[in-house]
Image 1 (spheres, helix red, strand yellow):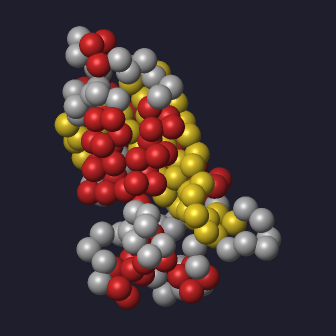
Image 2 (cartoon, rainbow, N blue to C red; image 1 turned 90 degrees about the vertical axis):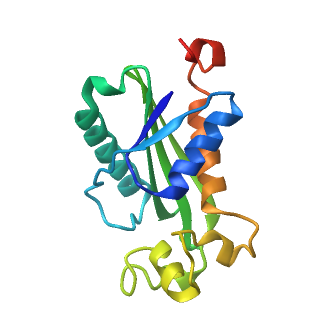
Image 3 (cartoon, rainbow, N blue to C red; image 1 turned 180 degrees about the horizontal axis):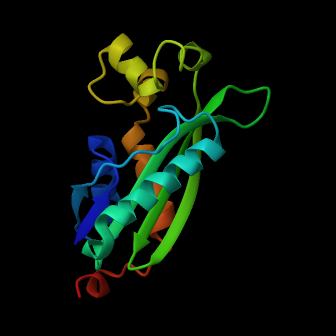
Length: 177
């Protein structure tokens, strides 16, 4: 089954493959990169949500009927302050659509250190670019650098995707038709 992803991010594609595999559906991800029309590093839940909907709308427009029978998937990552006494937390907005049925989820994860977020966007477009430049990261994944390797962006995106994916009728035998 095809899973059209509105990004070329290898982290997002791997997360999609793993999330579907967990429910018994093998997917082939197809990159259809779209623009979010928000800042490179969204700085609120609202901006992250807007970026996800923008990307997903463009994905649907680009694919049209080509996506029939497959899934269209958008993951927009951002950071957001939730309480004045805290710094930014990671946020993922996920949009999954199959044959006109659409579900949206918002997942909030762990608090980022100020030593990273204070440098975005003044020095780096986003925290992913920061870790690539400062720590030599190969992917835009800041989580291992402030969780002592205990969390990855892929694992957090998998969680966010799974929370939305379970809302679909995803029995393997029905998906194979």
